[in-house]
Image (cartoon, rainbow, N blue to C red; front, side):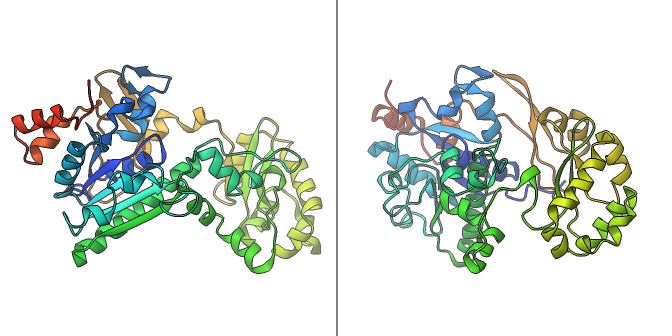
Length: 399
């Protein structure tokens, strides 16, 4: 088995809750040494105390975002804490900060502060609204970003209220984009010997994810409107349909798929109907076409339609989360991550979605609070008496 792709890459992560940790989670799964710097004044990351499955300073929520990382308490507001940070930066590739934008400079997490110590260091800032500008001091959370960036206005039934995703997609997108930015900057720093500041905001990422709909609006003035049955704004049929006992998702993104659909459903009249002869025609005549298909889909259960159409037409059953997280399916697709946690017992979750030839991740629990202080500081060259001195000067908090 080959070594982990990111073996030898060290990241100092001053991160919290979901967005930042979601990004470094995948870097850790790929072999990076992610050292979590946690704030002693708050008892570490607040997500350590989120139920259900919470025991002391450990929780299933925290483990979900932080498996395979290491933890050290460090008070970056104290000179002694800054001393430790700067020592750690000497042998690190990146500092990844997921705090409010205006806090970054005050905590010394910038290239201006750390570049003189390690010219190749990459300093990533992931915040709600950016490191600079008039909104840098505003805290931001996933629902706020989904609301303000226009995601919620595009989600839900046309006659209902705006709806945010059932998952924290703005946080996850921001974390993954920040991880991508980190690796791009580290790659460049290894070529040039010079690192840089990198600024990623959840809000900017959410805007970028509008993608083609942003192009339609900014270029051609096409407004963003909610469409019924989770349908695509222009491709028809490309949506959910109710069946006799549930729902299916259909995606006729190519002409051949529409032809296969009407053949399999025994609707030959649709093949010669000029109203449905092209993408443009089907979009213009969406309502009569969907009415015909909807009536047909309601006549049989979901299993019938999936069996009939799978392999000919892109189709999927609309499943519950519980059905999608079937253990057998997860094992078959190498998507099951399981390990034993000292406080939480046997933990099972979803694993790394990236498959690399010759490499399979080894999943380990998230770190206990400050559980790696001695190892991390010893690796950085500190003697036991020096660590005691740092503690007396408040480097790891007081008390």
